[in-house]
Image 1 (cartoon, rainbow, N blue to C red):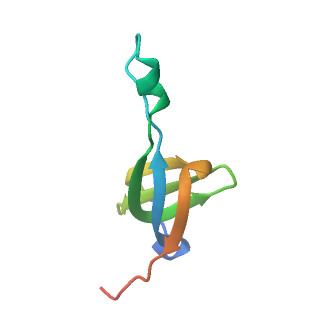
Image 2 (cartoon, rainbow, N blue to C red):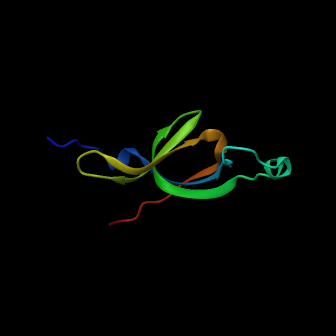
Length: 89
């Protein structure tokens, strides 16, 4: 029996957020580390989890109830979340 989901229970959103910077393991120049920047990112998907510390987006839903291209983003990294209007098929 296939799992069912109601896509209407989720908001389609655009999230502007900042991806943290990571360095290779080993020794790094201190000035390079001090100058590290985060990378601005824009993600679009259905908001499937909305909690005080994190959000979770999923871009794809299958008829068997599975999701694909999901990402969990720390709320502190989010700049803003905009609800998108879903058009007709």
